[in-house]
Length: 551
Image (cartoon, rainbow, N blue to C red; front, side, top):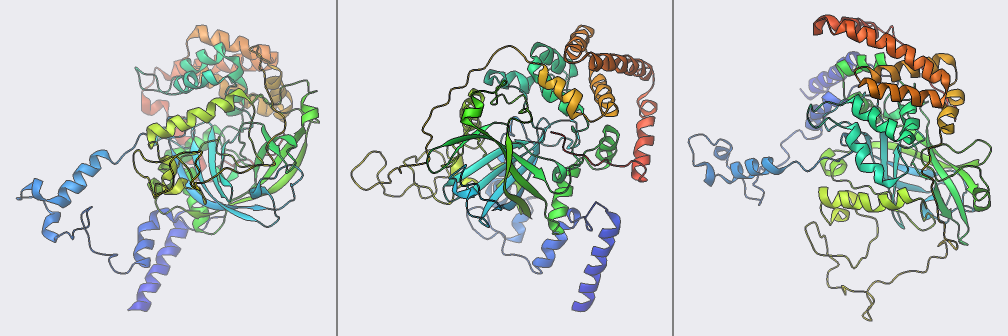
């Protein structure tokens, strides 16, 4: 009988492998998760209890014809269901958690004394959270928007967090723009629909946002899953060596699966059948032991070079100019384990770019300084003042004078002194020889420099076909936008490059004519061309292009 059971399970796996096909993935493990659990636990895992630990009689699992308020199992389940959701993140609400390790492959001790980056072969465990920036928790992962990965490295010197996005430029550089940015890219408060008029109205008033919007509307806008995208931690970081000497670096996580992106049609086709494709693809890759990996490089500028550049290297809305830096490889980040409880790990995780370690004092720009406060404030609202006591956030070593307040408090530092300084042998600070021996002040201009956007359009986009697709995609976002805002947007695009403005204007007029004609049709007829496109995709007649790094 046991042999028959094994045979049946093998047949099930073979059947699954024929139903689902992904590049380098043989089995879709997602729908098989519960079956896998049953295989691992051939008998019930224990006796059902109430939350206080009392065994539950089988008659208590039915509340019909009983006194419902004397049934503790019923009260436990119902009252907990009422409150089991916590506030979703304001941004990056939809995500998926993974585990892995970072391995040092090159000697970078001349640049940083950070223990995590020193010692070839050293491995440091991490927890990561892949996510989409704008979507709500139940949203579509294939929408054209920013994707990200937040990484928490559990180092011997404390937690080191990197919050990355999949394009190498950021939305804004003025910290006061955070709130308006989030609101303009989210749902209209009256219609509850994502509103392009809000977006373009804001962008035309704040042209600094246009650079990221161009990346988002280009072929780089929709990655072919989380595994095939590069990742950038936004800021230029100051790092110091054991002598306190500083360098400025931009960290870059380069995918070792090959950079690849989706066209709008491909993304719509996949989303029509699997809006959770990014999460499914990552989960299955790990379950099939096809572990995704990224190479960690850092672009380096010396303090002396930074003082003589003709651009601001700390401006997060632009790229560093070629020829002004050199690139050094640090190591590899490998994802090799799925979390077994997404809420416990992914939802309760709290990432903060201010979580740094000796040897990495961090970015000196004002945006980063503001983010130090903002993330902590968000975690206090969502998880409470002791969010760093939650298991997924606890560092390897910690002794602090911070204690009490709402649970979890863990050991709460037991009976140790609760104030500093003291003469009763409480924990004491170190002397960090790598602490920077200079103080960096960064001053920004309010004027908007369109040169980086023109550089993107003329040199990073590799050919006219790509430039046309950027114009076409941008034009579709302008359809149904207030005509006054459209006029301002086209003017702004023309200031970047006359060719960009002209291409977008032509595409806009064509897209507007199509939209006007479509508005006269019923919904089913209107989306028939998209339906045919999806059919072509499912038949394998739409190919996914590979991408090359051009920056």
